[in-house]
Image 1 (cartoon, helix red, strand yellow):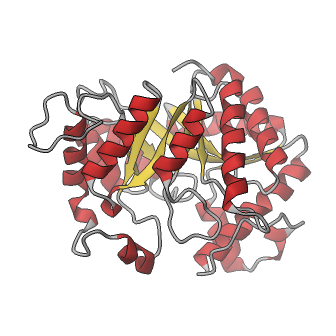
Image 2 (spheres, one colour; image 1 turned 45 degrees about the horizontal axis):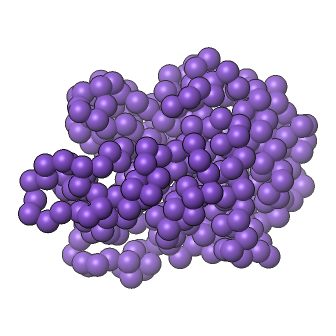
Length: 333
């Protein structure tokens, strides 16, 4: 198998901990992933979330890139409607100048927050996600060696910062295909339209100067442990956090609870079965089988592994097991 593996980190704030510890854990995980041969380490922009510390995403990318040496570090993603494209070009131009050849820029059109927080984020309250395609093209132009706009991104102009389109619906697939950009689908929490999105992206893809062929990266949850029982126990932290979020009670990442999934009601059980269907929970052999089956079903060009595990050492071990059982897939960029 030759499917590369990457890491998605939300810099989770565990119950009873704080953001400072989350940032230390993120750097520790990135260094661990680099040693294991993972291709990328991406951080995601969220706001107003008590359990996610990666709100200032570009700042945290700089922290992680400065503490690593070979792994690509990027945003999965920057929620572009929250920002001026020029500011993002300057931020990622700065990162690329500091860490050349190692920075990725994934772009999404969701606010990464609730609507009240989204309104607090907006530089222009009239801005709308419908402007996302134009904003992406404006941002890409700032990185061009010959920008069409009179304003220059300094640093930014002429730098090679790969742009990815992120999505959980058909919209992102169509946009990525039309612009000839790589596409990352959020199947780790919104898998409903995954297969149609992949089909549309590949069928409609137009080669560009950035990418000659379609490239699909899919999010995938992994809770790996030395035994199936331990893995199921570790997975309950993410299950609790997701139920809390969808119930309007976002929380810090809770400690694991024995038998949590067996205690929830049918509505919560159906929610977890649906949104976390792209997951592997179990022993090394079980995780290997789940990963292989997922790649066979989707034809993924790359997998982005996320493991929302309360205990940091157990989280590191989960990524280690994933690399071990899928080790032949960890190929250089």
